Length: 416
Image 1 (cartoon, one colour):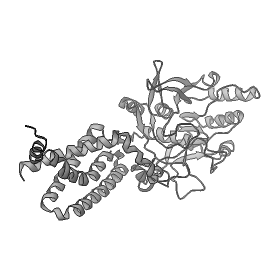
Image 2 (spheres, rainbow, N blue to C red; image 1 turned 30 degrees about the vertical axis):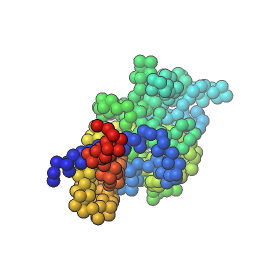
Image 3 (cartoon, rainbow, N blue to C red; image 1 turned 90 degrees about the horizontal axis):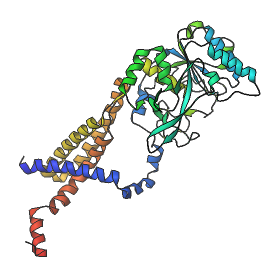
Image 4 (spheres, rainbow, N blue to C red; image 1 turned 60 degrees about the vertical axis):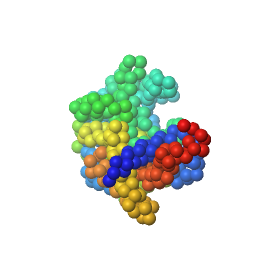
C-alpha cells in the first residue's frame, strides 16, 4: 500500500469525526427528530437495560435488607416502628416526610416522636430543593419537623430522573451521591443507610467522588400479580404482616429495615412514587412503572453494602476507542474501495451490520457478567457513518482539493 492510502485513511477518519461534530451541534439537523416516532418510544432505552431485565439471574435474595410498607396514619406508623424495633434491627431508614405536627391528632405525633427516639440507628429522608441553573447547585434542604429528627441521621432522597415535574413518569438509572449546601455536606439516603451498616464500603463509594453513581439494580420486591416477571430479591412486609407479627425474628434482627410507601396493599397498581427502572420486563415503549421509590433506595443500599458499583469507560477511553474503531473501518473500507469497487456497497454494509451486532452483544454480556458499561454510542456512530462518509470523502472532498481541480480553477478564473 502506498503513502497516499495511509493519508486517505487518516484524513477519511478526520472527515467522519468532522461530520459527527456537525450533526451533533447544528440545530438544522435536529429538525429531523420530529420524524422519528420510534426514537420517541425508545428514548429512555439503554442497551444495558436488556442485561438487567433478561439476562442477569441472581436467585439470591438480599437478606440484609427488609422493605416495609408504611401505614398512612402516624399512630399506625408508630405502632409498626415499635414492633420492628423490638426485634433489634441494625439500621432503620424511613422514606417519608413528617413536615408539621398534626393539630387534629397530637397524640399520634407524640407516639411517632417516641417511637423514633427508641431507634438505635435511624435515617430519615430529606430532599434537596431550589436548584440553581447558574451554579448547578441546590440551596435548600427540606426535612421533617425537628420533633421527629431528635435521634436521626438524614440523607436526601433525590434521584436522577428524566422528569421535569414530580408527577411526570420517571425513569431512574442513577442517583446523586453527595451535595454541599451552604458548606455542609449531605449524602444520599441509600448511602447513609449503608454507611451505618457497613462504613467501609460506603467510604469507598464517597472516595470515588463521582457526582452521580449508576444504580446496580439487584432486584425488586415480589409483586403477587407479576410473580413470573420479578424475582423476590428483597424481603418485604406489608402493614398487616408487621401489626400481626407475621414474620420470624431473624428477618429483622441485625438487618436494615427501610420503610416507605408501596401502595395501600401489596400489588396495588398505584403509580405514586413509582419509577421505570432497567428491571422493567418491557425494555422499550414501557407502559407501567415497575418500582416504588423505597425499593430504589434499597437497591442503592444493597449495591453499596456488597460493594458492586457499575464501572464505565471514561470520556478519554471512549474517544480513543472510537478513533481506533473509526480508523480500522476507514482502512478496511478504503482497501475495498480501491481493490473491489463493484463490491463496495454490499461488503461495507455487511461489515457495518456485523460490527453493530457484535458490539451490542458484547456490551450486553460484559455488563451482565462484570457490571461494566461499555460506552458505545460514539463508536457505533463511527461505524454507521464510515461507508457513506468515505464515499463522500473520495468523491467530493478529495476532488475539491486535488491538484487537477486547482489547476482547472486557475485556468477558469485566471489566477496565478
